[in-house]
Structures are given as structure tokens and as C-alpha cells.
Image (cartoon, rainbow, N blue to C red; front, side, top):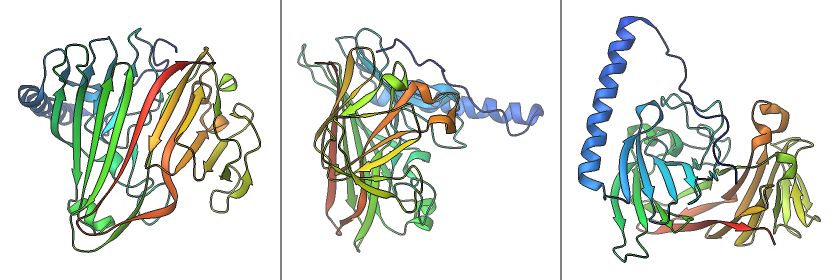
Length: 330
């Protein structure tokens, strides 16, 4: 894998200038710093879990494994924005147009799509990716050789969410480093008195050496919906290729009833192995020339529920897990 995110991250320009804006910004930074210090005192674990100010001063959880691997999780959006191997090689990708001022969701890493994937009755990809998640707990196994750092984040209904989606819920997202592996566990609980439905995805961006060298294996024989020409009326087909490739055009396909294991070869002799349970579909996306500044540097392979809605009855829950691991290409 390449050693760093090529384009870096930058906050957007201020909405208005002058001293008032500066004073507001200083006050926000002061509040954020205080909140981060409180989180560190309550949830920090020396050598394993640390709370810091990330880009734009946003509260961020740093997971550090004894093997040298690390992960960075922003509370805003519950987004994993970095996952590095022990070598320091970055696996994820954050787009150069990403902003860290809460004006919009973070573009890159592993954003949430919940309770809606894509366009629909509410805002694009739902609200989970542009709200602050709360820290529920942190842990690190005290076995010296298995000290896996972990953070559990929670999102619940608010006046803001109820206006878009009139349901009481509790979403719990756990991120763990198991050696160099990144593990996620996503649970959605119905805490209300009536059933609700949702679609969802982990909109994962992976850094690649070059898009024309990347390919996804494990999808041959699957039915897929090609949204590249007309997202509202996608063409249906059966995947005949041993590997899905990129670089010649926009790629936006939903593979239905996907297997639990797929791999993304990144062009360096390495691949990201993705093992999932509970996720039914896989979305493969690269924007091609619609994002000229960065399309050559990433591919999205997204664990998703898109073709049907999940129904959760009152008092019940739904769960899906993923395990990401860098492996050598066979």
C-alpha cells in the first residue's frame, strides 16, 4: 500500500470573515479542546486509545495496536478516516475536497449511510454521517499479545432526526484493531413502539496505486444493477468477469446477494480482503472524470443493504460486521 493519503485534508473557507468569525472560532476550539480532554480522562487507555483534536479541531479517537497498526475515528459521522498498517502504509482514502467543519459529511474513509442509502425521502445517504456520535465505551484486552484497542460509538434519535425519520432507535458502531486488521460491528436497535425500515451501507474508500491497476474479485456470477448511465433506472446484468476493473468509465454497480468474502487488489501486489456478515450487497464505485482531481487514487467497495429495506420490530435489532485485512495477492 502507499505510505500516505496523497491529497491530504483541508477545512473549507470560513463562511464569513472578520473578528466576529475569529472570536467564534476561538470559542469553538476552546470548547472542543475541553471536550476532548474530558473524553481522554474518562475513556483514554494509555498506549491503546487516545482522544485528540483531528482536522478542524474535531474530536477524534486514535486506536493504536501494539503491533504498530493504527486507526483514526472521528466522532462527527462516526467516520473511520485512517487505517494504517504497522509499516505506516495507509489503506483508506480521504478525498482532497473533504472538509472538517461539519458543513457536510466527511468525504472519504468509512462514512455511514443510514437510515437511507443514496437519494430518497430524506437527505442523500441519510443523517448518520453528518451528526456527532457519542462515545459509549473503550477497551483494550489486557492479554499482552492481544491488546486490541476498541471504541464503541452510539447514535440515537433527536428532534433533528425525527423530522426526517419519525422513529426511535439506537445505532451502535464498534471499531476494533485486531493486530493489523480493522473490524467493524454495526447494530441498529428499535427502541420505539412501532416497526421501522431502513437501508444502509459503509461507504468505504480505499487508496489504490492507480485506478487502472485496481480490480475487485469474488463477484463473478452475481446479478448486478448498473447505475452508471441512469441511476433511477439501472440496467440489470450478470457479472461475467473474473475481476471488476476500472479506469475507462464511471463505475457504479450494486451487486446483489454478494458473498461474505471479496478482495480489492490495489495495484501494489497487495489486496484488501473484506469479510462480512449481515451485509447483503456490495456497491462498487469510482467516479471517473466526474472527480478529475482524485478519481485515479481510490476505489469504493461498500458493504451495503440496498436492494430491499431491513425491517426491525420494536425491541428487536439488526447487526452486520466487517473484517478488513491487507493480504498479498496470490
